[in-house]
Length: 286
Image (cartoon, rainbow, N blue to C red; front, side, top):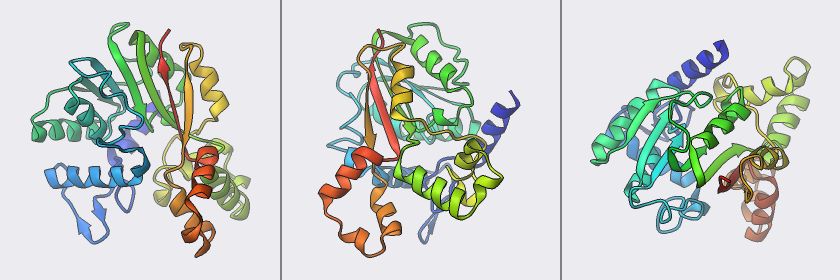
């Protein structure tokens, strides 16, 4: 319980703003007041920019089944952050419920929906103990959140409990076999900087996960594709997992200065499909 309190407090004080420094509202030479329309618009711009290959006519259209879960379908987002994805689901016509563990995210998401003239059920919830009835939602998803849960298995169990039979799901988790984790975290920080001498693997991953410039966050544990497929197959007969490597352009530039900028696109895409930082798992509840 104390670990959950630490996680809630840390994320309330360091929300996912996509700023130059994690949790801050400065972007290049521009600063914004949190909670304003301009701030939320800037959050969207940065978030979309980080994930350009996943967009079509609508943001994240290549992975999100907007059309299937529109027309007042009941959609739940677990870990809504600043509310960008919840907003897009609402714009597509879904009846959205957006939850998060920390009050900063809930406050910002409520403001976003107020500014946009949209409606949603937005509330504080613990992913390990959701208050909703069984089989409440047609589609349940979570983007980049549950690897921060000390009990991922319980969070996934809750995710499927509230999803109706035949309903869809999507979950993005960090990839432990990614180039980012193996090279930047384990090799550079753990081996070269010798931090694995006083940090265990979980502590190392948390220290150099989200907020790494500010000594990291309380809990980050990336998973492997095999691990997440095994966990999800308990609830779904058609689970599939794609590896997304939208961060590799910047990573190649750091690893191979000069050369990274001229690597052919087909090489980058090949590496992204194998060693990207994000695992996107999806399917339907049995």
